[in-house]
Length: 582
Image (cartoon, rainbow, N blue to C red; front, side):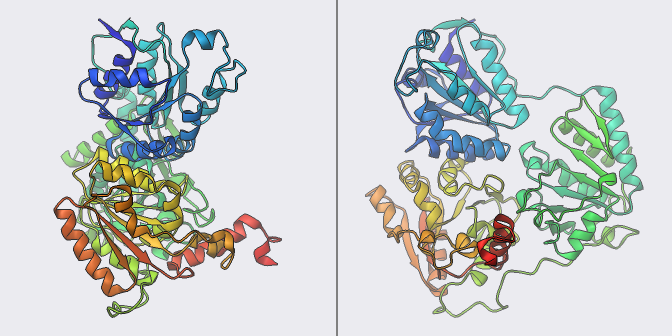
């Protein structure tokens, strides 16, 4: 079968589950954009700039499992690179596509615009290749093979990939496979699969203090449902890292809380660090999720799983697709052919009291100043704001929390069942969440979306609100107006001008960006005004209308966790001779 190269690439994206191509037009990709209407099942969605497009692709990938980004050569690729690097850090498959100069010009080393005008067309691939699992410039000779290879790489490695499409080849026809693209992983070696299952179940059955520690790869590789089932079938308690928040239920009696080294509640820390069987999902410890590297896992008790690897107390099992292993473990426990951990399939309450199994610890202290909510005229404060925000979240919502104040305020709150919690916990680029909101809503328009973002972060990518409005999306956006970078104030410079930002009239922006926007704005200074805004926003959302809620907070107020995080970060960043110790 013959097909134009561009149409083949777009068809493969559709077959892999992508229905939107997110990006910015440019002269080297316009030819590919002309082919989009020829391929059923996919459309182009433009954003205001390439960085925002990459952030939107990140959000889309979190919801859909794969996304596609379109830029133009050089200026577009490098503008998107921060977002591509963020997707790499957060283990997200994004297919980045860049229109490139004509093949004859690159091979002839022509001096062109959007380049260094030195005939070198390798530098962009080299730059982006540092942050992708694969980066390639396709040609008519390799296109069919490379397009499939790079899509498989993104899906299997859960990393971004990059394809340059020379502008003079996308309409050339090539021979392509008759079979549709298969995004599935290869099957396991049967003997290795059975051996790994035997080893895991044997150790699990002997354990007196089994536990699980969940990080973000459990979500990326689709392990959550099976892990929740294994916890319940064996009565095994589990904790999450801060970077793995909400992947498993936070309401299950077997849920311990959040593990963060020395920053953990005592019961959580003991349950994880004293476990004699600890199932992990390839956790990545950075200073912010490990209590400044005070984590201490029982190395001789760890069973670690990734997408294609299993390590059982240091013994490596290769040739295994772990989703198959988890399915086997669940099946054997359900049919009784695999021995359960102490307590068997007892209820969580029975197991907590059973022989040798770590009991559930005390819950983390709520970040609330007191049991009573303030009167309606009381000004907003963080101690009472975040529990109220958590209570506003519904089961099945998507909650997006900007790095810094919003994430720290929400991360200690227990969220309802089925909530997708999005945060850039490792990369931590501010401004990420507004475009991410747009991409997530493209991928899952049926879910209610709540965004929590600070004023400083909002100013980095504010123009993407216009795209959200143009597509008539209906999120509820909570903007924290504290006139600057509160998280940085608590690190250093509480009164410094460098932590100030211009005080925009944020609530006016929906009608600035779209004159006839149905999105309603609310300016909130007190808890009484907050209750009115929440009621109105909830009612509007049910009618398919979004809301923009501007929350006015004192510039020096912060969640309790941030007040501890700031000084700790200053000590870590600047050392014993740093200015905080001057």
